Image (cartoon, rainbow, N blue to C red; front, side, top):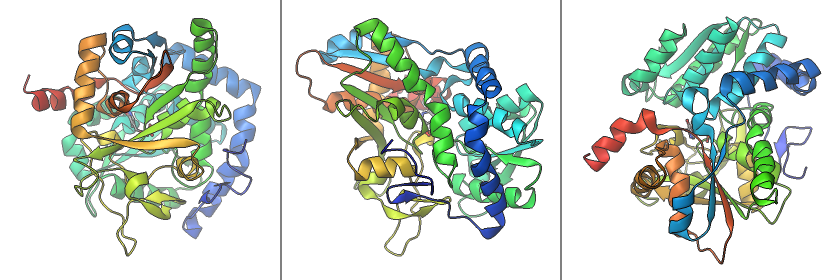
Length: 393
Ligand SMILES: *Cc1c(COP(=O)(O)O)cnc(C)c1O
């Protein structure tokens, strides 16, 4: 429990709910209800059923034989790439849509950068027949046309954010504004373990199914529920939090979070938050974020849109500070090579986000036969253009 949120909404020094006063009633309503709703038998039954029949869970734990051979250790992949819509994000949106129904909400809003969370949200809104509005930066709408098309196909309205840099940060501001104006009928589905309390805890709980399944699957395959190392990439931190969740109290399990170093941590173009960041408030919670000396948020950069975020969730900030998990970073080039290697050795094309986690294998030293679990957070179909251009294939 010592790594979990306290009743005030904090993980050590991080977390809380730093929100405009006008959002207070919305957040307070959610805070009072979320645990009770999530623990209802009927809720759990419906959540588990949808995870099974709609998302396709449990996702397999795959023994990656040729990667294992290459690195001289035993490597398993947690196959979140096989989920409906191609990544882990659907675990959270399925949970939140059921919660929104029980809160009596009729309308869903979300923000999206690369469009992955927008797609996962549009998907569950279609499933449940709820109105869906997705805010997306004007620049991202142009860059991520296939995901915009998917959202539209499923009936979502995509509204361009035209202020500032016209990217994720601006879309988030627009979504907040919408929620303030529509507090009664609208639920805001946040896509990672970020935002004001209770979002980081709620999203982590929905994603914790990843490590819950992994323990059972490891037990079947190896006789032990715990591996030596658990690796996951970190944007906001939701696939990593889901992958770490049920291992937090097993102190012998090495938890390794991989951030995007972009063109290099010294290059001024990266998203290596723990290395470059300082404590501060971003998107409603106190955490670690990349900022200038006078507190302006620095524009992050990564070749993978999903890791291109200037902060990390508050629980990660805590795990970093108390050193329960290790935070490292991987460059664009290292991630791209690891993505190609995985494709060639295993016949699996990982999302470039996930490829960052694979790349860290190159930097590890194994003594004898250790067990490694990597969260394969998503599939690389969305990244094929980037891979093709990078490798000139
Ligand atoms: C969005 C995304 C991520 C990053 O988000 P987290 O909240 O850090 O998990 C990682 N991998 C994939 C495939 C994604 O779509």
